[in-house]
Length: 297
Image (cartoon, rainbow, N blue to C red; front, side, top):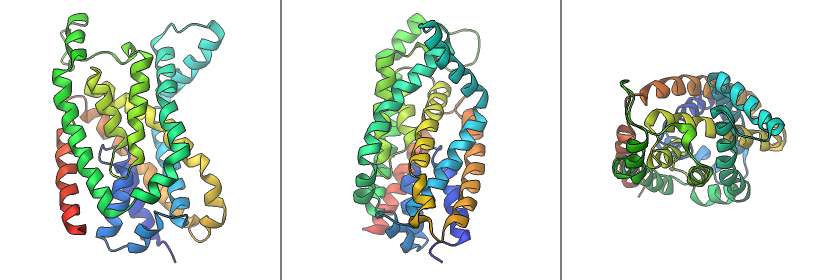
């Protein structure tokens, strides 16, 4: 058996957690198998193999969990999107958010379609993943530092004085313009490198533009949903083709594990970022990345 059910569960749980925690699912999917001595899985990630077909199921499971958790948001967003075609105007915050997500999805979607496989072949290796995980940590910490000093925050504090609530100072999500949304989407391209977190780098891009942690996380999770789902659906023929031979049962188990882990992860993180920051994740990535670089040198 090329992939055991135990490995499928472990990798599914890992995907569900690390896709949303800002610590890189792709990086951890390379590093953990190496640390556990699952060298066949490590090798399989950098070539056309059963593991790529298995990942399809994990992505779909994760995306389904996100859709379920944000189902009310997506109902309003999709409704708002189609309403703009009828009215030919963007009038509500839901309509604006729908188009912000469309604009932000374009860069990662196009680049991923063209370069995802090539980047995986080159960089989905333990030492490279450890290097990029360390870089990811510095990006998270740097984002926190820059946010405190950014001109966007000063502009926000003038334009949007704090209310009597305890919510963290920050711009409202629907005040982003489309150029800023595009920049957040461009930042998401970095997640094609094993070790760079999709949620982390998009959160940092949002924070730098003045969003608070809660809205930056929400935008990041909403933005991740169509990309993750599209990646899974686009590669679905791999799972039902010859690459999926011998791993379809494991893929189903892995997808269920990823979906459960993703649901509880996003539930935790939405609450976490109401009051907390990226600092603990940045420190973890730097420490884990350096430790793995030493181990794999």
